[in-house]
Structures are given as structure tokens and as C-alpha cells.
Image (cartoon, rainbow, N blue to C red; front, side):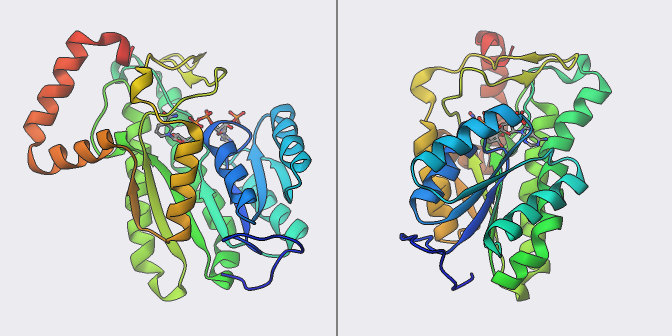
Length: 279
Ligand SMILES: NC(=O)c1ccc[n+]([C@@H]2O[C@H](COP(=O)([O-])OP(=O)(O)OC[C@H]3O[C@@H](n4cnc5c(N)ncnc54)[C@H](OP(=O)(O)O)[C@@H]3O)[C@@H](O)[C@H]2O)c1
């Protein structure tokens, strides 16, 4: 990573410049906050100008070095703007976290094809396009890329077809890039996040594309956004290849690897007994 420091910053990420996509809210906002508190300058991103401005103002008020760019990360030209914002504001780029995503609450058979594509686009091209635009700068700084995936990429999850497929795609992409670009010194990692507390205004897509609130999640299964952000930041600092968050995530890896039929039986049973969990 670049050695040049940003004036006045201190901490493990002092002098580093990061882009966190989808950081106007939720886990992305808390990851941006923690990177700032660890010394980085951070470019914030989202599609909602008002919410983005509020998040930026809160971080600036805390004395952090931030810039922001309203950009839809499924639009390549907008991703070039996002990367230009980092270079214009801070001069270089060390860290990319592809966090922006839309999820779903819809069974495959009911989903309009355009809605399936929208969810896939946000989870696949929403990571590919920012990375394509940022890669020359990340190669220059021998920087770090973290794809935010989900534990649902490790196994199928009913009512999450396009989301699970998109999250699995970026995990495989990270592996391929690690092999293809090994000589560049760029870190490519994946964080598989488990159930996390959500902003009350978080929305996912129904089968017809309408934004709806997420399905019920037992609170005791959820980590806080701050806990998840601290795991993401530690993952970046240690340049880890894969981080699976939560005991449930580790259990899914174990069962999926060694007892896949048992895993499917458990999911089918919860589909019958805990429909509200999926619907
Ligand atoms: N919360 C969980 O339980 C959980 C579990 C597993 C994985 N994850 C993953 O963790 C990440 C963050 O999730 P979260 O719970 O914090 O979700 P969230 O609150 O909905 O945050 C997602 C952010 O991405 C932005 N976004 C969505 N589409 C975008 C686009 N095309 N271009 C730019 N920004 C876009 C959203 O803002 P706008 O819509 O206003 O643009 C929002 O700021 C996601 O990748 C998610 O899949 C979360």
C-alpha cells in the first residue's frame, strides 16, 4: 500500500485512502466510520444524495477525512466518477470495499425476470464495475479489495435465489483474481456476513420489484453493525482471503462441506416450520 500519509491521520490505516460502496447506510456506513477512526480517508457512496450527505456530514463533524460520490455502482461510467472522486480528493487509492447490494424476499417461480436481473446486477456488476475502474490505482498502491458477500453464498437459501447466486459469484471472482493477479501484490478477499442488525429503513425487493422490509430475523442471531464492521476492518488489515462471520456461518461451512444432505434437510424443515423467516 502507499506509504504517503494524509496530514494528521494516525492509526493502523493512517495515510490510506479507501472507497466503501453503499456506505450511506448500514454496514457500509459503519465500516467507513471505523476505517476513518483507524486513520484512513474514505470516499462514501450510495444512490440517495440526501442520505449520503447526512452520513458525510456526521463523519466530517467527527473530524474525519471523507469525500462522497452519488453513483449507481451497476453503471460503469458512474464507477469511473467514484474512483475519480478518490483520486481528486486524496491523490491515490489503497482500499476498495464492494459493499453495495440489493437483496430480495421472493421465490424464484414468482420473480419477474427484470427483478432477478436487478438483484444479480447489484451484487455482481455492483462489485465488478467499481473494481474495473479502480484496479489500475490499486495495482499502483499494491492495495486491497474486499468483496462483501454473505453466508447465504455458502449454501442455497430459499427466497434468495438471485442474491445467493450473486454473492457466490463474487466469492469465486475473488479466487480467480487472486490467481490471475497474484504478481500485482493486490489483496483480494471475501467476507461472508451472517445475520446483522439492519437500519429500520432497509428495503429489499419483492417478486414484482416493490421495495419491502426484510423478513423476520430472531434478534439473538444478529450481530451489531459495529461488530461486523470491526471484523471487516480486521480482515482488510490482515489481508485475509476469506472471513466467515458468526458461529452460524462456520456451522454452514462445516455442514455444507461434510454433511450436505443433512444441511438441506434442516433448511427444508425450517421452510415448513418457520415460513416467516423466508417470507
Ligand atoms: N444485514 C445483513 O444481515 C447482511 C447479511 C449478509 C450480508 N450482508 C451484506 O452486507 C452488505 C451491507 O448490507 P446492509 O445490511 O448494510 O444493507 P443496506 O442497509 O441496504 O445497505 C446497502 C447500501 O448499498 C446501497 N446501494 C444499493 N444498491 C446500490 C447501487 N446500485 N449503487 C450504489 N449504492 C447502492 C444502499 O443505498 P441506496 O439504495 O440508497 O443506493 C445502501 O446504502 C451487503 O452487501 C449485504 O448483502 C448483509
